[in-house]
Structures are given as C-alpha cells and as structure tokens.
Image 1 (cartoon, rainbow, N blue to C red):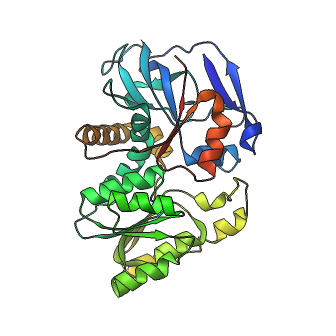
Image 2 (image 1 turned 60 degrees about the horizontal axis):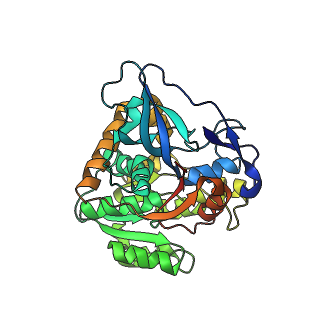
Image 3 (image 1 turned 45 degrees about the horizontal axis):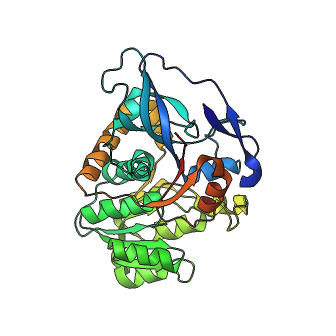
Length: 342
C-alpha cells in the first residue's frame, strides 16, 4: 500500500512524502478498505501549517474520510461485508491506498455514486447535519447566515437550510462563488471582501437580527457575526479559516485569536442566546453512534436527491501538494478529493 505522510510543516510542495508500507489488517470490529478516493478538508491545511492541535505529531498521515471497497472484515462485524462499496470516516489516516476503520464509521453507498459526492457526505455533510439538525433546530422563515457558504460545509448548510425553508444570507469571496450561491437559492449572497457583510445584513434584518449563524472564519468575523444575533439567536462555530493567509502562509495568528473577543455568560443570558462549538473528532471519539446517525441521514437524503454535494476538484494522489495549494488558497467550490490508481 501507499501512504502520503506529512513530514514537515509549511509549504505544500515540501510538506509531503509518499511511502510504501505493508497492507493493514483489521482487528475486532474493524474493516480494511481498498481506497478509491481520499477527501481533503480545510482542517488538513491547518494541520499542514502546524495550526491544528488535534493532528498527530509528524510524520503522520492526514485525511478524515475515504471512499472505497471493503477488502477484509474483522471479527464481530455484522453491518457490512467484504466487497461492499462504502464511504468511511477515518479520523486521520485517510491519505492512503488502504485504511483500517471502525465498522461503525462505515456506510454503504451505491455502485454508481460519484466518489467526490460520497466523500463530501462522509465528513462535510455530516458536520453540517450535526450542526444544523442536532445542535440547533432550523425552522421555516428563520434568518440564517452561513459564512464561507461556497465551501464544502457551507454548501451543505445551504442545502439543509433551504430544505427547512429558511431565509439565507451566504458570504463568499469571489464573483464565481457568489454565482454558485445564487444558483443554489441563497436569498442574499454577499461578497465579504468587497462589502461589510454585517452592515448589509443589518439593513435587511434591522433590530430583529439573525436567528442562526454558522461561522467558520473566526477572529473579528466571528465577533461581527455574533453581534448580528437577535433575541433567541444561536451561533455555531465550525472553524478558524481566517488564520490562513491568501498564499497559505501563517499570518497574524495571535491577532486572529484575540479577534474573537471575550464573552461573559450574562451577555447570552440577557438575550437568551447560545454559542455552540462543533468538533466532529470529539463526536467520533466519544459518540460514534451520533456520527453513524448523521452519516445515515445525509446518505438517505442524498439518495432521495434532497442533498447534492458538488465536487470542486479531483487530483491524482501523487499531486497532493497541488491539491493542498488549491484548497488552501480557497479556489475550490465544493469537495476536493485525491484519486488512487486501482
């Protein structure tokens, strides 16, 4: 088997090394997959830059999810069998031609499902579903802001919010991404680079404010988003994308962190507001049944055509550095994957 190791922090063209290794074998409750495609997530970019504290120490293999076929089955596995085509949450280790995973993190997929679509469902759509359906409850007519709405999780949140009949404000940083948001039915697409998104939303919502914010940028953008909440509003924080500069370099890390501000519980009590953090690694570690439930829900809705992930980039596994550069510079619209040669 082949594995892509992160061997040093920094530039993508110096960070990775492909190594030959022995094929893995499953233990009790596990399965081995022959990988067709590995998914990339923005957290991988942060890990490459040394900014993701949950990442293993280098050298390590990144990657949250894979699409492939079950090659071997360990004891006490009943839900799936050898030969099944599946998508799986790997919790690191996904940048490899073969992986071993907990069978509870595996969901069968149709033979004709696009690998990029399946990969997006495994992590990004599960994250969005957990945030929007398990941590908050969206209702028809809710005013919802989705930051970075043209990214993988952002697009999933748009589709889930549309399904619930919400009025959606979606931010993006380019004309092409705004056009995609318009096509998806976002009511108010806003270019956060050219416009003050908070001022634009205040013009529309006034004193009522927003009901829900899904925030993935961090820093001052988080604070601006929080200030837009109305009474009973909820803000769900999903990441800190602002910590990465336009060229993928670390910049103003401390300033970004401080930009969040300091908050006293009384602030939330007075307006009956909530601030919620989402980290799917912790859910996978401590509540695998929740992860499995989210995976089943998004897969069922995808089969019914109610959720439809977009694939934003496909790279051969050997082009890992180009794939990371593409994702890190926020050029992608939708899911980015690595394809492995059979």
